[in-house]
Image (tube, rainbow, N blue to C red; front, side):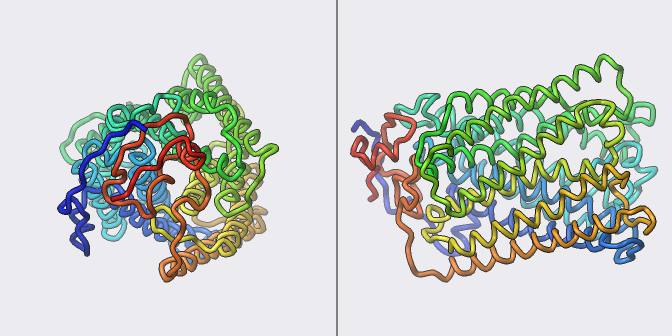
Length: 544
């Protein structure tokens, strides 16, 4: 086998101890630090969600006052998006596995990669400080002008929160640059475009979307800070919709920035646990690219009630419905991959099935809401809360846990307890649907979102109680996962290097991988090099 070999010197070995982590530029350690950071913010944001659901469990609850409630749901939303989902999928899985899956020893710019992590961690700490020291409740998480101007939100907490978002955008952009250069310049010999793993394709599309969308939001945030502190007039009361355009030009593609990597995880897991090649792999790649392109053509559907011309509204109704087509293509590809396969019903596959069944509901409700007249009725209701949780929790979070259970043997050299994993899945799946499906009905019954309490005669009590029970069921499922984490940390039994008989290059090297990944860079001969290695077609990379 033709290969590239680089001597591994003793001084190249990873530093041990705390300093080895704090000063590391190893993409795998950086990825693990992203995951730990993201999981901590996930727990914090989840606890805020439990406060929200407890407050709404019954009419007239006074657990928190309305201002505190607004701050809590704002920090819940921004924490889940900017500090959990994107860092976990893009920073965590992307950093750890993208270089290995393309046969590289590291990312193109290792120091910049480590810097992007510390910037993101700093962003999370700054946003947390904003929550602790200042009331910024008036503007909610969308920071709509003029509610976010100094006139309505004079508190310092607003400025601190905006600074945190700016830092998060900087960290995200630096990471995207690194991924793009790595993918284009560091692939192993023989890894042509159609041999690139599906997760890497998803990450490449995500990186392009980050590079195109994030600077727009960052510019808007900088302009808003200038308006608040230096008397500039970028966003005036008469020009308030400019903020909405800039905010949603990022924030709708951000949905796909969070979902596409999870789709990439699903595209890696399903073929392995179905014992079949991915059905229509080229169609999956093309649909990924189309989602990335069409994601920039739909942002105005968030603004139908803001007042847009009928011609523009009709265009964005059309594009919002059209973007469901490549997503539907993926759904059929994944279903046909499982169809007739020899399904290995372990936890990673169950999480993927949870992803498919919940994300498709989010997609259907999105198409329903794409119609302008329907959106006018549903826009400010709990229907929207249900819709985006089915898209983001149903899409991203189930995908994240599928990846964690699938790749844990590779990352830590230990296997999760599959029985606890299945219990985690069952509790999370039923808890999720118990929480968010009733919100569709509450929205149709007229319950507005962003309210801290409601009167008992509105008929919303039963649905909210069921949703609260579901939220605590989700929390119980996460507790089961934490118990599984403790168990895997205490386990002495090493996992095999390739326990699932995977398809991609990470399964050809030891678990956990050495710092340099490959002592010999392999030459790729198909889109399933690890399968080739098991069948004798390719020699696995040697480990020094």
